[in-house]
Image (cartoon, rainbow, N blue to C red):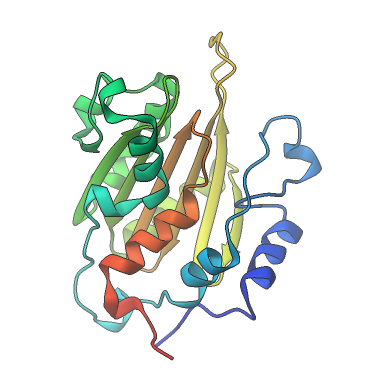
Length: 230
């Protein structure tokens, strides 16, 4: 059984920086003018995400358990609760794609619409939404896909020339959505993460937290069979 391995959180984080795709806290010169500084996750958080996730479907394991929204992304959930749920027009929680378009900015919908043909082939999926401040929101989609769909989606992202890197067994793509017609300075950071039959999409529109590693933590917590005990 293949397992995500690393010599430690610092090693994984350093490899991302060297490769030109920093999940958090570092960026290449080419990205410097288009990305905002991100908060570096704790070493424990990074180590949990990297060291405990194993491959699943290719070894005939059970179907993926999709995390419930209140456990899917602890960082987004906590920011939503800290700001005050009663401050928002829309509640946080699970949402269908047609309803999501009424709650979020067009640039948040762009990544989901662009790869919708692949999302439609998922055997199961869950989309969760969190307003985190008056202008910001986070959307996460966790899908279970077979190897063919996964490879097709990855091939398309490479054709689209998205920034790509590896975090152990996780293939990570990143893009920055900045609409040409937008008068807002709010940028939308998008992460697509693939590990065997799990496809995680994290869309951060104006949120101030770190959500990608939290997304990995949520998937691991919902799927104990992915965890390798010491």
